[in-house]
Length: 266
Length: 313
Image 1: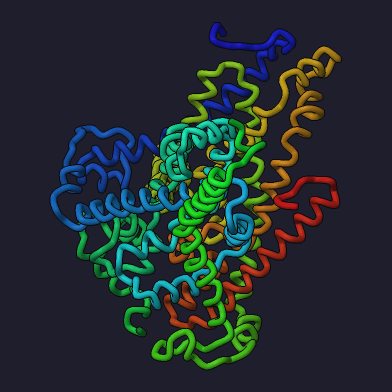
Image 2: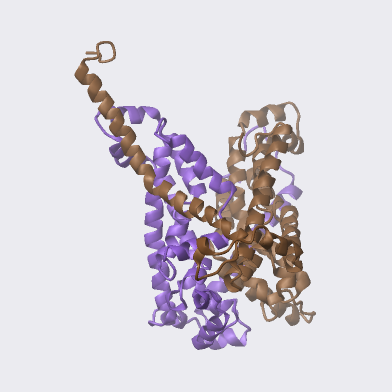
């Protein structure tokens, strides 16, 4: 217990308590790590071994990189990977830009329209518009089957906005004053003072956006034709709809059969 | 030298110009974000009028004929809709009872660890599943709990009966709650850990010196300190009681059938997007939104009555 920093007033825990804690923590770690191990091991095992074992492998007998080679061989998955990467990068940058500028403006006192805008934004948290109106809006705007439909409708996340605004507000007022006395305008203050001080917050919010874009599949299934699908939506047809990873054509057939009527109706 | 005591005309003009420019820049910076919210939130919100119309694709949103409350009347008479409402409430209650305490308990456990490297390691590991998409989480649960999965292979290897978890409608609701726990319990500790870190160390010390053991310190120092956060999260959870993991449910609905797995969100999706009955589906969505907002409002009021901060004042 050399690394332990127990304060002097705290009594030494009883061995039973300590054992219970250790057991609980080990369980948590195992519950997360074993499934991860299954993912990695299965990806490194040969197709034969995976199929023989019922769809998973705990430890590959002959590790191979075939699966990874298949990903980059130029097929559906390669294309989907490119789409996902593109949407994630462009979407994250656009989202960050719009969130930073709005959060910065709302963090400064006395901006024209600041109060109503803040209320306007927070209200959307309480009352989201709903799936059908959002879909009809994207359709009316002519964004169906464009990659913009994966980014624009989810451009700014209220939670991320509030986090960044709080962070900008915590920048000491003296720094703003000093920059202003040196003749910096608001844009200059943002770029040269606030943003360099907020690297950690920007990294966190950027990560949230990137993960959201990378993991999203529903909007793709809603707005895009299947030949433009990003990775998660392709994975969904393979994995969840029961089509085998090896048999891509079956996956395609399932998808076509289950495609909603919106493309035919409109 | 001091412009405030002897403002020359020029300096004053300069300052006014400066202020105007200043407000102007900030206003311009606000525009892209505001435009987004106006178009994609308020524009879409206005689109809810479709709930009072019968959508005709050729006529578009505005040209479609009005039906008044017809869609809502149909909805309230539709048994499938009430099944979806019941399923949603049932899952929400299960989540409230079995999911909600887990991040809290885990955070309290992590908070008592005096060994910071162990603590940081467990924390990092527990955050990981949050970053995995629902597609992968569902696939993973199939690999582990499916009929040829890790668990059943182990059971049959040990000569025991195998259990059908993935395809069993009765096991479905506990299964989805377990998935939520696996994916988000670790991530959910963050907010509690932040609240716990705010507690003044001296309060613990004073309580210990006064003879309070670990349990009494927990009851009289820790719990009061994090109560506002617990109340806040409960209120927000209540507002989302009618929306339980749309992506998660949509992915697994077909495996056990709509009787068990249809929730309001998937009902809206299948009626509207798949079935093309936009007005009817929008009515169900609007119902959900209004009930959610009312619940948050009411819960917030109750919290204020009980002397809590709530979500907003």
